[in-house]
Image (cartoon, rainbow, N blue to C red; front, side, top):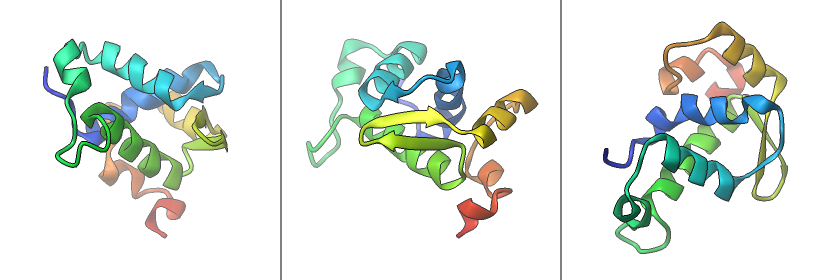
Length: 110
């Protein structure tokens, strides 16, 4: 499977944080790479700028959108945790979480 786009990453990202624990972003990225069954080559695929791996970039963009919607928190640099709103979303068991879904949250629209 090729590296998924950031919107495809959103729901699995939230589910990863469902344990309520604080996660290091690098651990979230590794967990999601496993979840998407990325090959070693796909895990190492770099952006054209060679600044970071493609999967790290996609996970970071998913985090930004989820945080803007208030579904996760950054208790410390490089650490994420599911917010109360994020827990509520998971209880609803949505089929997908993407930018269109996030537009229901006023904080996302700001």
